[in-house]
Image (tube, rainbow, N blue to C red; front, side, top):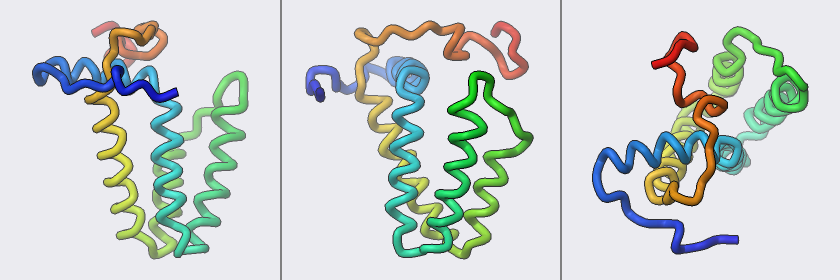
Length: 134
């Protein structure tokens, strides 16, 4: 399941950025799970925040991931973050998110991309901010 040969240090900064781009597209669902797991573990000592997170995760799961066409709500990410910050666990959430970003960044930089098969157009790597070609 885990192959140490797939982890190497990038040769240069450009290689690191390429790995970041491809691995972020390829492992995006895994990275979301890792970030949410770290956030969940950090909220074990804040039960109200944990309940808010679980309710929001259930809403995200139903409205975005389990539908054939995801329902796009304006600012749904912002609503989730604001609700969590209103539960007075701000420092805990920020530290957990920082740790999660570091874990994900380390994996994206160390994971080789030669054996990954990503359709760049479907992953959104070839489009600009407005959806036009870059």
